Amino acid sequence: MQLRQACNEGILIPWRKQEPEAFKTAEELITTDKEGLIFQPEPGIYGDVAELDFASLYPAIMAKYNISQETLGCSCCTDHTVPEIGRHTCRRRDGLIPRVLRPILKTRSEYKKRMLDEGIPAETRMNYKQRQTSLKWILVTCFGYLGYRNARFGRIEAHEAVTAYGRELLLQAKEIAEGYGYRLIHAIVDSVWVYKCGITEKDAMALANNISAKTGIPMTFEGIYRWLMFPTSRTRPALAVPNRYAGVFNNGEIKVRGIELRRHDTPLFIGRAQKEIIETLSLARSPDELYLYIEKSLGIIETYSSQLRDGKIPPLELAISKRLTRRPDDYTHSVDTAIASQSLLARGVRLEPGEEIQIIITSAKDKDPASRVKPLTFSLSDHSYDKEKYLELLLRAAETILKPLGYDAHRLKKILSDQHEICNQLIG
Image 1 (tube, rainbow, N blue to C red):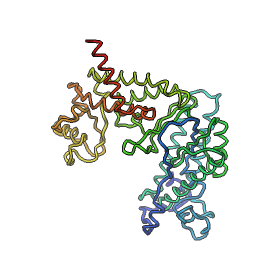
Image 2 (cartoon, rainbow, N blue to C red):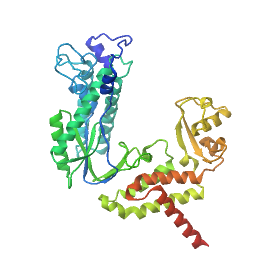
Image 3 (tube, rainbow, N blue to C red):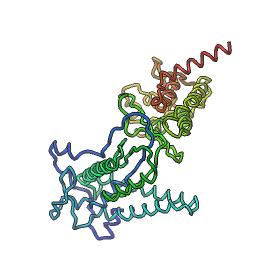
Image 4 (tube, rainbow, N blue to C red):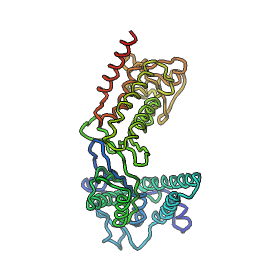
């Protein structure tokens, strides 16, 4: 799209990009080479939280502040400086990149407005949604492309200017929200989560409109959570992971990010168990009501653990996807990916770096590395797996959701053990 715009306007396109990154001192590098701003959330469960998002923040910044390869560091507008890093952008000459982006931003905004029309058929609404999503990913890509070393109209300094404006705008959004009596729960790059007791949709939309008006970048209201939880980090229990959370909006819509359910390397069986737990807890209308659904959640865990013990879970349900980072014979340690890919290589199947392999854990603690895991292909005839290891994965996935409610993996395992013992006594 950038090349087409340049061709249409008669702009000379470089055959190969030859502009290197400008020299920076160590101090300048520390100041400029930063990404989006993130506020660390406190682990726990929250209610009355609204989520607000800047609409296509980075592309909107590029369009609004005229950030392009040729507009950065001009000689005519030295007073128009970028926050924090001190560079400046031109206000007299409209940049190529903003000219490319503005029609896309406008079209996406129009599709999103049309989606809100309650009179249109569901099929038409889905069509609008798919179109605006496609445009969203074009806009996401354009930011990364701006910093790509081989992009003909890219420039790393322009990329850094965009993130500098992004950090400033997120700080402004935080200060505006706090000025209206909200408490910031979490913020990450282009999204903020704010708390206010008894918050309504009208309140949240008014806040979004105020932030939009004062920053000049459209901010949208995503919804109010019945409950929102930030699980603790496994390596640092006192902290939460910024991009790892689960919650339910007032309309019943579930939103999860970063947990096992969303990971491509989670077995389908484990992901389904975690999903059922979340769906059960989604019935709670507030954080306090979550405790009413713990017993049912524990029942789900018991059901899935019983299926594991019975040894009848289909191999495809237990497969773990791993991506090769090197050739099978280049691995020096007996990691799962190496063991499985070398097993295939021994049978004439060579995988290359970047390809995925699906594995089954057969005996995680076996002294013989070749016995620990096997490729899914070999499991179709030999249906065996490490029940204890998969139970551990199940309990870890359950812990992610239930630990804020007081149930960690150790406690869950003890509950299962007690129940199993009672069942054996009854059978006996």
